[in-house]
Image 1 (tube, rainbow over the protein chains, first blue to last red):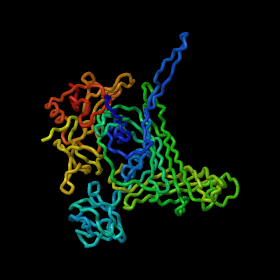
Image 2: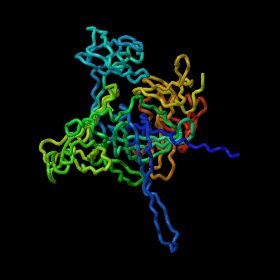
Image 3: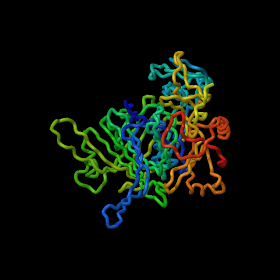
Image 4: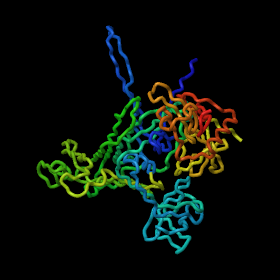
Length: 422
Length: 157
């Protein structure tokens, strides 16, 4: 009897990434985003059929003319790992890190269900209101909770009460004495100049002793980074990278996974042209394109380098139609325009996503959007609402304006528990 | 004490704190990584700064490959760490790079617990000295197919 086949399971796959500290020197991957369908690796080899005449009609010489690697990662990036991809897309050294205002330690152990903690310092814990703090960040007992400020007690140790808005005023986990207590770290990431090189690695059927293989792609750069949100769904990121060369790996990576949650569309607060969208936004898409120059093949088979060229930032969104102003703005130059105008309709876009813990946030900001298309809606027999589709591009130099250019086409701001610059 | 699986090296986590995907992990003495939940040992999939465990040796120390820049020959795995063939010992780093030397660094979120030289000596004592060979195309988890380095930061013997 023939033994059954032992096929590879299609989900036995990992994608890992690390920034190259020395360009061209690959690094074992350390960031492993959870992937979705659409994730793929393509060794983009070019071939040429050379037909030389020798009297017959059978002659064809096939040569390989070049090779590079195209990578697509589809993922809902988590708050900490997202910062790496944002930086890689926006450019080297694009992250400006602001350390947390609160950085202290627990003055005693606490039990699960505790209603307060004691800490050694009250820096950042004066004033009034509430603050999100992470206890024991990066450990198995990490807990992000909301506390009431000011801290009380007058001197070390200070007491911080758990705010009733968090789990009814009770901590969920026990925490050890001397555990770290921090507020959010802030990463401000505008677009910069040249992008850093990144090593990417992909395991195909090699987890769980399945005997598959892995390839490591060195010297990749982010070509496109698209973030899409749609009502009720988690944000979906599609990152397209180009790599110089791939090599089969002898062993699979140890896959580590960030334990924070993804961002969800309804966690967003959206501001279009300076006004809240008032719950009308249905979906959006933000696409960055670094237009990477990969036509750099020299004496060898692969590109010799990759270069960020012009940056394009495209915005699309869809709103429940309650006003025709966006159409007037796009085609008639302003919300009060009444006929075709040479004026480009300008606006702005801001999306701020706040996770329930209020510590992990993500903001995208375009200072000036030039609207390029906002079509009149199609008449529809069913009488349901209209969705208004809007397309625009980030404009750095306002065509009819004066004064300095905008500082960026797109700025990402992340607050999270990554306590150090990306 | 359990044996340390071949191809694994002890490493200390220095990243931010993450989880490990489902699977088997080992303490640095080769025992299975477990934690107690209500008195029952279960796989320990948490990973905190300072945790020590066994990792693939090349993820800890990095490795050196020798490529053919023209793409005509298969890459040669020279060993863990930074390895230079004796005939290339007098060349500069730039000249070696042009020959196809490619150094891969280890994971930035882990650090070796013991220096590479000590690790290689221990491995050699266990009779696991091997020669450079072409990069293998298949993977054996926990028992890596790739050969070990003969020398770390020095020349190949």
